[in-house]
Length: 193
Image (cartoon, rainbow, N blue to C red; front, top):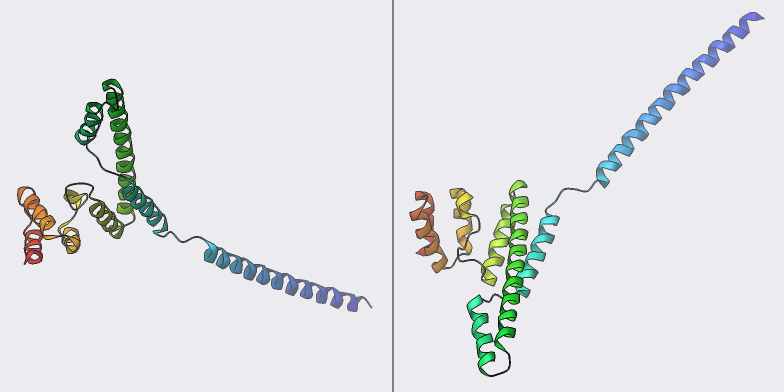
């Protein structure tokens, strides 16, 4: 009779070993499934953040008004001549408007620099083009291509497509005075024809 007990024990061990192997495989499958689900659910790093910033920048540019200090001074001087405002009130108003304008300009420049820094680190040449288009549409800045001196000849050539003839001439003159890259100058001349 002792022999059947040994067989039963061996059978129990075999069954236990099979169960633990099966449990390990199941646990491994569950872990793999969980990792796959986590990978699918993880947010993809996209340019959505850059686009949100660009839209915010575009809104700021379209809502803003660009006035020079001289123009503000002319309007206020006219109000003083008409007797609608005292000279001291006029001077205070001009100073407040100019300081507010400078602060707003500094904030806008900071936003642009932050956006450009992010765009450069993620290879966002497309974002830089959008910023240039927005700047030109609103009329901010005198030079048509932002960060021009840091761009390669190929990048400059790609950006020429959206420029007017007057802006192309500005780029050509600047290029002649500075880097004088033949490929850029030839690309500008082709666009001007």
